[in-house]
Amino acid sequence: MRSLTRRVLLDTRYTLVGFPTTLIGFVLMLTGFAAGLGTAVVWIGVPLLAGTLMIARGFADAERGWLSDVLQRPPVRPRYKPVPPGAGRFRKMVNPLTSGQSWLDLLHGILNLPFAILSFVLTVTFWLLPLAALTWPLYGYFIMRIEGNMELPELLGIGGGYPVTALFYVVAGLVFLALMPFVVRGAALMRAGLGRALLTGVAELQERIEDLAEGRAAAVSAEANALRKLERDIHDGPQQRLVSLAMELSRAQRQLAKDPDAAKATLTNAISATRETLDELRALSRGIAPPILSDRGLAPALAALAGRCTVPVDLDVQTVERYQAAIENAIYFVCAETLTNVAKHSRATVCTVQLIRLGDVLMLSIGDDGVGGAHVAKGHGLAGLADRLRAVDGELTVQSPDGGPTLIMAEVPCG
Image (tube, helix red, strand yellow):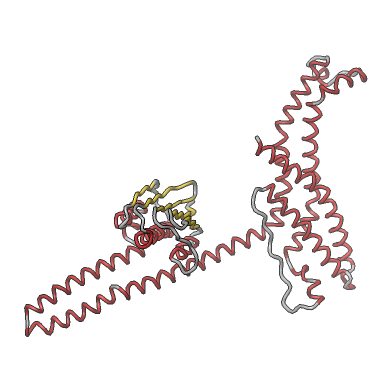
């Protein structure tokens, strides 16, 4: 009830205060635009147009602040075209004329007036109707006595007299009171729709483009980091083992003629080293794209990760759906890297992994009772996980105070 009352009051403030504000802005902007356009040929109109656009920007900023309350979203302000470095006085003065959003602000200031009038009238009407009807029993009796006229219920054939008339108005007032929040909300949204389209639409598109650019950059960064890590792991592990294996085989070849028993022992060691190298290569391939993930999905792949972790893992997978390969790879990679960090650095005694789907969001939660201190600052392993998630429009959240416990959550859109 409190939230509904607050919603009605915010919408009412928006429509009531917005009408006189819009009217003042309409007069200033239309007058300034007409005067500036009419005198532009003699250059006097140029500063008039620039000033009018700056006035429009001020009214637009005020409207954006109100829109955040009505639409229940953070305020969005587009970026206006900045003044070029080293620009002269005239170039600075006419800079508003070069910004497309400035003209959208002006267009909104002119087109908004009829919407503001209609929303104002609807709001005032549906506030006054229930107020007048519900309070009629307080003053209606005296009106009936003074005028002596037939009241509305009698005209409708309901009956006459003060009690029936008072009841009729009370019922009508309750009906209008029930309708009032919906009408006021509709009036506010009607006017806010124009403001969102003209004043924040471009900014929202800019933010979306920036998010896509950041996602692509994050994907490139994540892949580059993964390749560097893979190269380092191969160089430090299998490559060194293969070099040692080649030396062992060369030695066995030399020993065959002189000391067959020594050659046999050398070959046995080489075979053992070959198996260890194969195990390392399998482990590295599992970190890239494990076959179990592509063949059977996230649940078996995460179960395999949990089984290989040196820290006991309590696994809870509540979704068995298949998702896009990029999403499954991102979730798997985050889980694999996090469990590796838990085993290496956390000193935890138990770890929990939960995968659930909430609406159109796939959520992976990994917690441990270790020493904590994990964060996503650049230069740390978790920063790479955040970049990989951004590549699929996901988000990484880390709660890891010093002393623990640690909770890492990955949210990825999957709708």
